[in-house]
Amino acid sequence: MRNLAPGLVRQRVVVEAIPREFILPLRIREYLQGLAEVTNMEVLSGPHIYPALDMGCGAGYGSWTHWKTSGSTFYSYRAFPPQLPHPLITLDCYTCKPFDPQAVLRYTKEFFDPVDLDWIEVTH
Image (tube, rainbow, N blue to C red):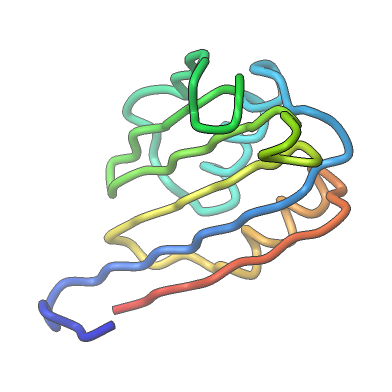
C-alpha cells in the first residue's frame, strides 16, 4: 500500500483467530478494555457491543471502541455450518498513534488461547 500522506502516522493491525468457544459480550468487553491498556490508548467511548444477527454466516456480535487516536472494531462469529465450521474472531485496530503490534498479538493469544491465529500489519 502506498503512503498517500507521509506526514500523518497511521498504523493498523488486523487479527483473525479461531477461539476454542464462541466469544460472548462479557469477554468481548473485558478484551477490549485490556486492549486499550496494551496499546496505551485513551478510551473516549465504549466498548460498544451489539448483536449482529445476519453477518453472512449466522449470529454473532459486533463491537467497537472509540479511542482518542482512532479506535478498534471486534467481531465474534458463531460457528454456523456450512459457512463457518468453527467460531471466529476478528480485530481491527487503527490508530494515528504508534503502538506495538506484537503486544497486541501476545495479549490476544494469552486472553483467548486460540486454536489458530493470523494477522497483518500496515504502518505509514
